[in-house]
Length: 371
Ligand SMILES: CNc1nc2cc3c(cc2[nH]1)N=C(N)NC3
Image 1: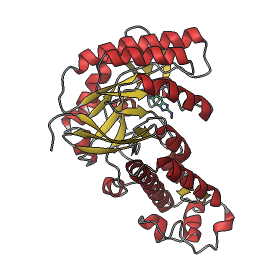
Image 2: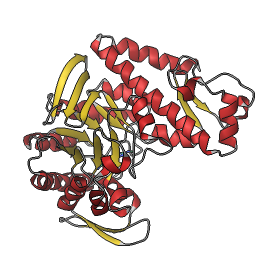
Image 3: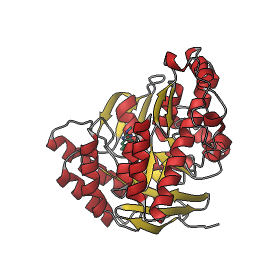
């Protein structure tokens, strides 16, 4: 049990890294996938089920929680871990991305962003200081800086302005966060799809000597090769002894390719959102349970899985639940998908330790094509 926050690099295999992030609430084995728990819940899952899939950490969103139930209320109720019954690490996003993608009537200035809630239209102001204050009220273990995310494509001047503003906000977040030994504040590298801006952003954040670094402003619709190019340019500029978190990524294929380029932490709504839409991730690729061809198929999704949702229920039953829009359909497929992602991460961690990441990644990819 530690009182500090630290990252330990255990092994490397090419660009892939095996490590662990330790903090008082627990240790995160990396490469790690963080299930998204936007409003303090991983949708359609009990928290002990989320833990049972192998998750060491989950993600919460400042934007959603500040609007509902409110950051001060969460603090009065004992913090997010107590409220949601998740005693292990929680990373919270700062609200930068969600304000830009969800809120209405936004006005962005040097000081921060004013906006109206997408829920009830109430006015709010989000500054770097308020974002860190909210994440503290949530008792978040890993807090993200407030940043400005530019939607791509965008003019170079626009990407540069947002990147430089985000650097000034990173400085203000670092001051507001202060010195909290068991917690961390991560900077977020911006710069869109421009190599020069990405390098400038990463180098400026490195000078701030933060406890971790996220790569943001990707997974916003750009082609995968563009995202991977940005990783190849950005990761070498980041300190090797600090965790690297690629925000909002991604598909299993995105994750394999990004681990190969030096990323340690991931979050994505894909496994949970897909589960609610009838889509299952398996070792043999994706299965759309809405499709009628499953109506009489008594096979489970994966007889070799240790997840009951994948092993104990027929595709016919899952098809029936999905077609009937039964809650259990979303529950079982979300459970299957999160278990699949965590099994993928375990395979990746084992492969890096064994020096077999490239071969393992190739055989995982071939499995998807087998169908
Ligand atoms: C789904 N793709 C995605 N890209 C992101 C990029 C960012 C983010 C969240 C994201 N999600 N949060 C931030 N605070 N900044 C960058």
